[in-house]
Length: 389
Image (cartoon, rainbow, N blue to C red; front, side, top):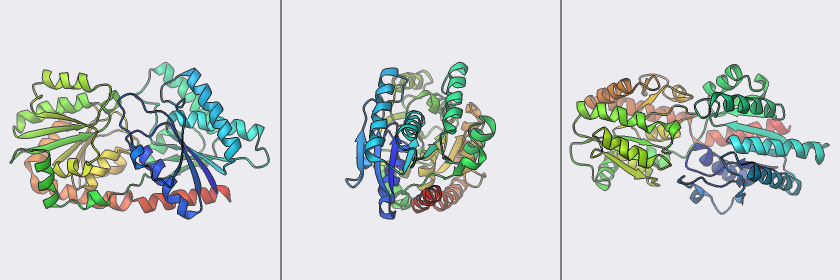
């Protein structure tokens, strides 16, 4: 069974990991996949290093995240041409731009070429861009597009129950019968293996002073991730806990602005901007509390990774975060934008190592059971078989 998997770009994040993993692991279960990806944006981390040689890949430079009519038209034509040549059984799209152009290409292909044997269409919402990304006017336009595309989509995959509820009940995209909830899955073994000896080595590798606590965040340095809120909380935490080091891992268009903001808040000496790192076991191994400050999240990948490593987590209560931090036994939530509440949660955990360790252990057990790789592959295999038969 042939699958054409289309993703906007293979930047750092959960969608890229899932697209690469599914393309690789489903090959052993009877699915031949061509993975199509577009162009990275400036300053974005690149996850193409994860691509195994066994996965067939096609790079379309015209497929890009920003709105660009000329590039979008070219990418659409290229996708239609790929469909004509590969004649897949399933088109599965990931992320907004790939979801728009890929589903439109499949609809055109089904009407013009494959009337007797139409390709089945699946789209995964790894979150959505219908809140917090664009102006109200643009959001209304994109919402109309998503509602129209739902009519040519056989299955809509949401990566958490909360995302499904937002799309179906609040945004009124598609019908309930089209939806399936398929949580993300990751290879978390190397993070789960982090023990006290590994933590000691990690702190030494990052030159963390003895006796210091470490609060970290990981993600693109962009508006939706709200690292300004992280710095607001860091300023408050620094007053209460003088021996704290803050790690900001990632890069993006806001790096210079955030570095200046750290200086303005008087915490520049305590905040380290580390850029993109592949040795995340070192980052999470050195971390005492992981702090996520996003304005919107589908499934919070970095938070899940940190929990697998045994870190206690604190986050804004947005998107699918509460599906992960489902109780105070596994992590603490605060209202979006409330720097004081985020800082209070972090300070409480830093002052109580026993509670921090209990939360870390409970969070690790939860994510290893719920977000494993084998479960993800089995879920998607079942979805494909049900759709085709």
